[in-house]
Length: 385
Image 1 (cartoon, helix red, strand yellow):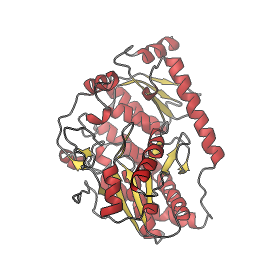
Image 2 (cartoon, one colour; image 1 turned 45 degrees about the horizontal axis):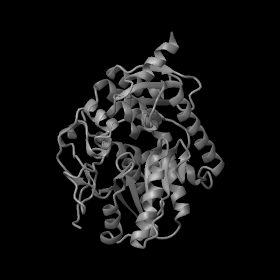
Image 3 (cartoon, helix red, strand yellow; image 1 turned 180 degrees about the vertical axis):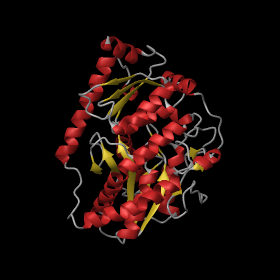
Image 4 (cartoon, helix red, strand yellow; image 1 turned 60 degrees about the horizontal axis):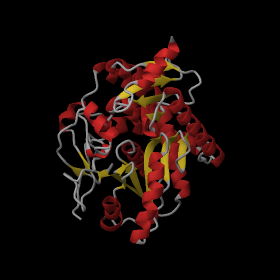
């Protein structure tokens, strides 16, 4: 397996992407949605074009960054201290899940090495719903990079409905059985909304600044691709590198700006005593809340497919940035943390409704383009009359 020294737009010491850079034609968003929903293609076989954020959206991002930077830095540091306590000996191998996990992985590596005296490397790999984790990437980490299996730590930004956590728990044990290894499938995230992670700093749905943008905060890489036209059996999963967006790239700026905040947060946490992960009772409560919300959203808005319900600010943002949204739900439409969703919804002419009893700050529903069109938005419109 050939070595790929691919770092995206990050500094080489911050991350190595175990992804195959490819060139592929973008698919129109609506065409992509029809192919996904009809079963003609898996979502990982296509990419829609990515563009620079609008000036208004970029302004909202910077406002969100300034507002939440200290909280986000503190939560990343909390996660680092949880990892340090759970893996008290030996080098660490952070394996972030591209691409939402990548900025978190960069920040974790920096604080573990600079402030906690740990030896840590960081690789970013692909994991895809219903397709599993990139086993060639895992093999590379263990064999070519010579990482000890027990040193691997899977990292992501947040959980939505727990799909990635379940994918890890299915795919990693299968990998272990095949290769005779003992890699832990435990998932470590900043915000665990649905109780699906094994370690998290919080279960609150607040705006993680790294979740507001796409490639321009994730090393200029696309979402990962698994398409047999481009990816052979011995290849890593693929990605497109958006060189054309270099002038708009904030990836290095983001982690460099937050690094001093991380140092401050570490000093504060050192005097505050041990950091504890979320309790099993809290995780169970989050799982119950998630299950009830998804079930009730499907019933209330006539949603036929569970994958069309996306709870939380991070997942709602993804829907508006790269899917075909039908409806955006906000607990408090005036809350600063959902201002970017209001901007995106306005730009894409997506209906927004306020639900004060929403268990999350935001949620989004994907439009059913095959079955009943914009049924959820129509139902919401009738309810408001």
